Image 1 (cartoon, rainbow, N blue to C red):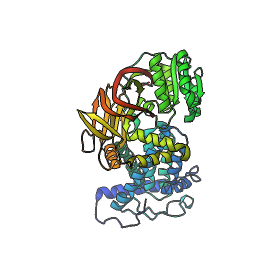
Image 2 (cartoon, one colour):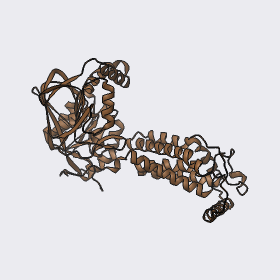
Image 3 (cartoon, one colour):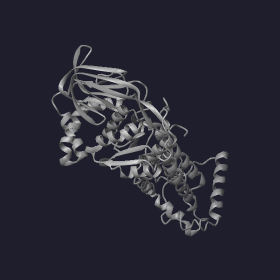
Image 4 (cartoon, one colour):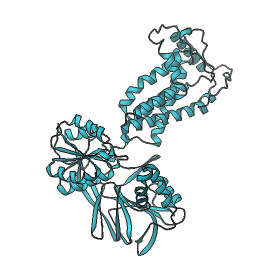
Length: 497
């Protein structure tokens, strides 16, 4: 956000259209300066100063993030990303391309003027660009937050003319540039609303206007109290069972035996247990995101208590695929994905150290230890050949790259596994990074990707770890992965409801 202090005057010469526009701009500026704005005098100058260097918008983003809802945090991040792009564009291209001096302050009352007059060139307005970029970026992710931030952004833009530091056209151009920056960011990192999961295949489920018949089991280790409280406010007759992680499976079993709808709030492992039990008991599942990543709930289109409450009240649900693994007489299900190789090894190392140094440090340490190991964590037989692998990931549904954003599933009932393989070789960290960046590219020396309906691995060494939805188990010999098409019924709000 470095200022451009070159105040080179406009080029001389007769340009009728430009001269008429500049004259109109000057008249509009003089008209605004001559108006009496009693309500604005104590507010707009202070508001204008608070937006210097983006301070106002960083504070607003912090307040939004403090609300602790995923959509608010994404809206805050998108607003700041849009602001950053707009500021860079204004200061590197805009002010260097059109070197316009600031308006004369003679017609502006002294009480309105800022204490320190900006020394940068006038066109376009950087404050207006930042305000429009932040507000537009926020609105693209969360219309509700956009409606709250919009008047503030409009006031900041207006304050630049009110205090006499910009012509109206400077502000309009800055606002247009800022809005364009927000849409450019959306092109690089699409919003969740841009790709709505298809509302199929729809399932017939009971509508529970007050939540009667819903038993929600919440894992207290995930910090779910606030979420289930919000759900209970919307569905007052729902039964809420809060329990420790060691009691989750037992409580889910008891809940499924008496519930019309089985509900769950927790992380990936808790949701996995609930999905397996709901399948076995033949009851629909209601998932309230309560973990860190919440892949299944978010890909389903449920981001919080409001979304789930709406779906349960209206009786809106879909059927989704479930993955199942079988190995050496053991089997399990997964709704997100399973993997062999580096990731299960990393999970084991993280669990070994997390009790001593904490979760995130343990994760970093685990990654370093696994990637520095002198052996490949997995060998499997493909086409009659035993091959070393760093990672075999099997997603329950096809993951699609969305701009620069990580992949997400747009169809949870497509009947396919998304299989990603990172081949063995030197420098595992580089190979894994290349596979992550390349996304769904089908072939390279480091990795491969394919979509299949069933997968069978043979020659898996005893003691090999398999991670599924955050849980870890040991497999050996032959591992079979198969789809259970449209096996699970899950509540989710349908488009247009």
